[in-house]
Every structure is written in structure tokens, then in C-alpha cells.
Amino acid sequence: MIVTAIVSYKRRMSNLIDDTEARLARRLKLEREARGWSLADLAARAEVGKATISKIERGEISPTAVTLVRLANAFGLTLAGLLLRAEGADRLVRAADQPLWRDPATAYLRRQIFARPDHPVELVEVELPPGARVTLPASSYAPIRQVLQLREGALTLIEDGTRHELKPGDALGFGPPAEVTFANEGAVPCRYIVALTRL
Image 1: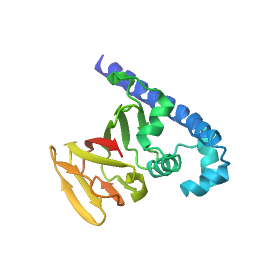
Image 2: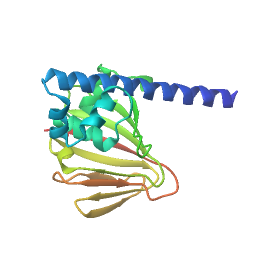
Image 3: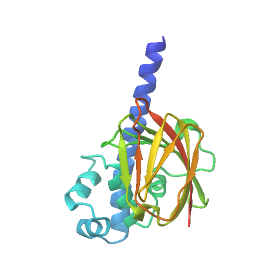
Image 4: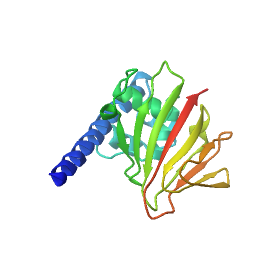
């Protein structure tokens, strides 16, 4: 009975992620075409290869977290804002309806807890597997300010060369836009919540 429930849960999570990726591929193409941009235009603005963008839009590959942040930034959106446009929005977001997205490069799992175009605050939950490391460019933090709280495990966060070692319950308010590396150097997954506001 327990094994069946676990298998059912994993299958449901996999379907949610697959659905989010399909919607995201469609949304990326829609955002690009709505601006009258060619693949080359978006590639130049996002500093992402044209062939990569084409494959993402066709659903042939899943974008990594870094690629997705670059694409969102090129559209003048946060990552959450891009995912929100792909999913649609409501003021009440049930736990079962919160979009999940898995980074194919690191397997980190991102849950969009809350985001709306008419609300200044977004909430995101991330699970970072052991040994995983993600570096995001300073440009991804230009339009936002954020606070992170570690819920489980241990997280090393390197912000503009400054190293922060976080333990469960610790919170960190991000400074001015800078390159940020999230690293799980422990043996178990870590989970953290990010609250961010658009400027």
C-alpha cells in the first residue's frame, strides 16, 4: 500500500514537471514572437545559442536554470514571472497546483509557491540535491530583491565572492545584484524558501 502510494506520487510529480516544461516551451516561443524577435534576436539578447533556443521551443530539450534565467531576463521578466505566464495565475494556489520545474543540469527541483503579475511578492521553494551547484548571473538579480531561508540540510551561498554557510532556520537578505552560486556540499538534499519582490 505504501509502495503503491509512493509510486503514484512520483508518477504525479513527473507528470506535473513534464506538463510545466511543455507549457514553458510554448510560452517561450509566444514571448519571442510577440516581440517580433527571430531566434537570432533572442539568442543575442539572452546570450544563449540559437540552436539551443530552437530545441527548447520544440520541446526537444529542457532548459537549465541558468539558460532559463537568461531567457527570462531577455524578456524583462523574472524566472518566476516567466513560469507564471506559462502556467496562468490565481490568488489562491493550492499545494497540488503549484508548478514544479526540474533543472536538467543539476536535478534541482523548483516549486513556484506563489506569484501573480499584480502582486509584488513571490515565494519559491527549491530542493537542491547533494553535490549540486548552480551559478546565476548578476543580471538575473537586477530587477528584484530577495530573502532566502534555509529549511533543511546545509547550503553554501557565494554572493559576489563572499561565502555564506547556512544552517536550517538561517535567513539571508541578498545585496546589490551580483553573481550568486548556490551549492549543496552536504550528503543530503537541502531545501530553502525564497521570497522576492520586483523593483
